[in-house]
Figure 1 (tube, rainbow, N blue to C red):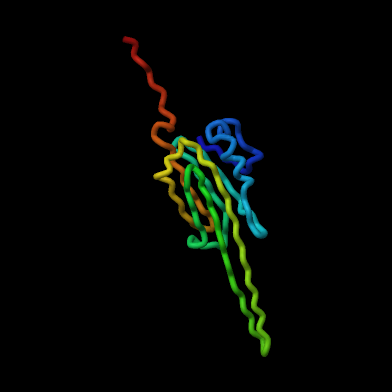
Figure 2 (spheres, helix red, strand yellow; figure 1 turned 180 degrees about the vertical axis):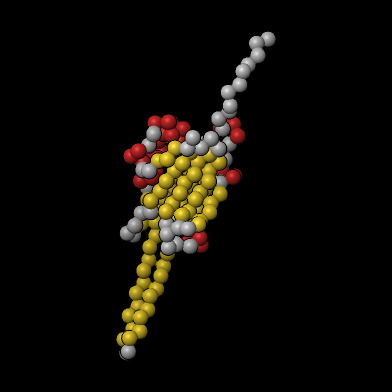
Length: 143
């Protein structure tokens, strides 16, 4: 069964114990000019999934970096608008950026982390290592 965490204030005790306090405390380590994108985190038996709601961006605007169990998602977007009216030209530069970092639990298989961007949502899949996945109940024969 998946668990959705809408913010670091609503962290369930179970997820906090599995992921560690640093994972959810890092939801606060974001920087942005004027807008911090909404974020969802899901957990399933197979792994974790982070969704960043960022409409208006393109796949190429994102940079993801994974180093020593730390995932960093960042965007640097620059846009220039120019309006010519008669003899006057108005030029406007708009720069926006944000960065979110997460300390990943040891149970994440770093070699299988993947990301996709569709319909304004960046989805980062963080599969669990085989040994960290929940095993089904089984009966043990007494010998």
